[in-house]
Structure formats: C-alpha cells, structure tokens
Amino acid sequence: MIALPFSAQAAAELVDPDPVAVPKGLSMDTVASDIKRALIGRGWIVANEAPGKIDATLHLRSHVARVAIEFDESTVRLSYVSSDNLDYREKRGKRYIHKNYLSWVSNVLTDLSRNLQLSAL
Image (cartoon, rainbow, N blue to C red; front, side, top):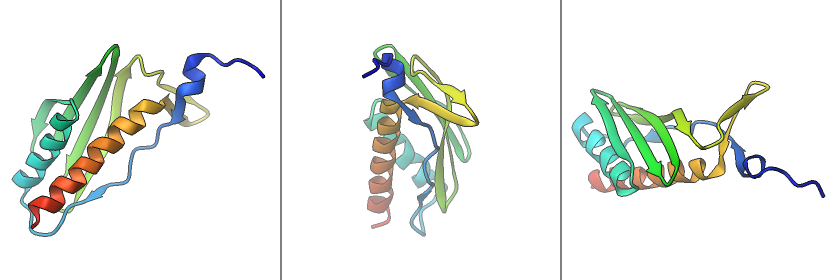
C-alpha cells in the first residue's frame, strides 16, 4: 500500500450544490433572514450583504472557507469563492477541496431548507 499525503486522502471533488427551492409566498427579506440564521447557526460570519446576495466566511481552527449565496423568491444558490488551508486545487478541469468543506456546506443547506419550510407555515 502506498502512503498518500494527508491532503490527497482528504480531498473530494468540489461541485457547487444544487439550488435550494424556496417555498411559494416567501418574501426576499424572509429568504435573506432564513439564510443568515442557517449560516450563523453553523458558525459562519455574514461578511457582505446586498439585495439577492450574501457572502459568508467560516473560520474553523486554521481553515477558512468563503462562499457566495445568490437568491430570489424561488431558489437559493451557494457557490464556492475561496479558501485557506483546505487544499483547494484544480486538476484536469475539476476542482478539489478538503472533504470537510462539503459537510460544512451541506449542514448549512440542510438548516436553510428547514428554516424556509418553517417560514412557509
């Protein structure tokens, strides 16, 4: 067995997640609030905010992840912006990053989906 460096073992393909559907009837203000609650609840910092867009940063130990979230009254889309100490790289047209980043993003989107559903009640 060949020993791989830590970063090679922990790398996963980086594909931006599918958009999250927004239930009908929610305002842009409600969607923005639900996004911020999901981010803050998972330790992310809202770094910048404009109509239909929120930039967020997660500082976790020596790791930093930055994402952009674009939204309207029908969908929320999260995309990778940059990172520090997460072994981001591009190879043969594909992007790779530490696998924990994918979990962090998935957790935020799960919380966001729940927040949106609760707001629609």
